[in-house]
Image: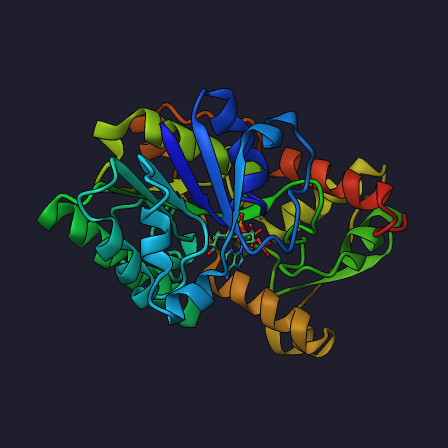
Length: 317
Ligand SMILES: NC(=O)c1ccc[n+]([C@@H]2O[C@H](COP(=O)([O-])OP(=O)(O)OC[C@H]3O[C@@H](n4cnc5c(N)ncnc54)[C@H](OP(=O)(O)O)[C@@H]3O)[C@@H](O)[C@H]2O)c1
């Protein structure tokens, strides 16, 4: 099939585009052309690259038409963040595509209520990003179920892979937390360290997209989590990371307000966003309907990313 990936050179696209090419699809990747995929792969020479700035093209009212003119069978949208953006594209592609796959987020759920969270649970998002993504999901599923628009939604967890910093055991992106654990130095965690994070390797997110395409009749009109088999508590995560370097984690536990005062504003905001959600999502639906088999547990995915950070000199151990 002819597959257009909007935003195909990022975390997920790095793995998705080669998977699609290798499966025999004709792939067209839309981006602004500002960055290259994180890993080189020969498949990129067989993918077509089209340079479009979605934000500018949408403002001019022509993004949907530009995508439709590529005559895709399938469109995978990696970078949709507003309801207007989703509507604009759906209107342009209605009746013209066999499958439309949208990238959501597990943040559509808001705080975990009954773990593991399933796709069926009522949405209680908070924060602008999660609220907007939940509104897009509601709109797209409505389009699928009312008017047969062939949409599937994939909700990734915290995407991990070699080339960028994963969410760390303190729930933020400060790589010094990894370095301290590796050196056996003390790390402070908020509360009892029992709040959770739920990672996923970027290649496993790509796997969900490819399997959703291959299982069209089960995936249309549905949302799927794309996460690892199990979430991690901050404490368990920190202990594992220290253990990789032969160290015992020296952890100090501080009530949130005290912990917050030890961190920069940026780190504290990121940690709060993660622990206030404390995601813990089920992959049962993706396993059952799509045959999703994650290649990576959370710790395996993070270990691969951390090895890359050390080799790149971004974490000194
Ligand atoms: N990262 C996470 O942990 C995470 C977790 C849950 C959900 N998600 C969802 O995953 C999606 C992002 O996927 P990702 O992390 O693989 O993406 P990413 O690494 O942020 O890459 C974004 C891609 O889109 C392109 N792009 C950005 N702005 C563009 C524009 N205005 N016009 C055209 N192309 C543009 C980028 O290339 P250029 O810069 O060259 O244009 C790149 O190819 C989002 O929908 C996000 O909500 C992410």
